[in-house]
Image (tube, rainbow, N blue to C red; front, side, top):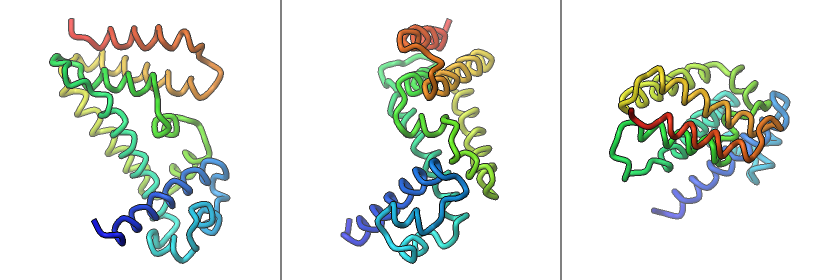
Length: 183
């Protein structure tokens, strides 16, 4: 891989990370200039990679979707040769969340910016359809999948507040994993 490609990838990553942080902190008030400064690039450098504010916001959304999926897939245990493997990975990712997952479920100004940007809602709707299809193909009854999935998502949402005791987290995680086993 050439230095140019590596530098381009690093610059894009820096811009996306800075945009996510800045939108989360400042919401719609976040300017392109402030995001560029936080990324350590010029405003024109940012606009070279993302020509419009909407392009940048959509790229933040796609990046979040991709990082979220990667975090879940990293939790797949390939030795689990039984139905529910992806669902159990989903539970593990939600109950021991990395930054990409907590960012996806935290109630911040970033969510408001994403929802207000044309095309982003459709990106999340497409991702939801993909998750539904993947989890439906995982081999467990869809009703159980939905219960476990939404329970796990509630856990990660509660983790960003005072609403869950760390000891209860272990119990909830273990119960959700047990429910995600085939009968």
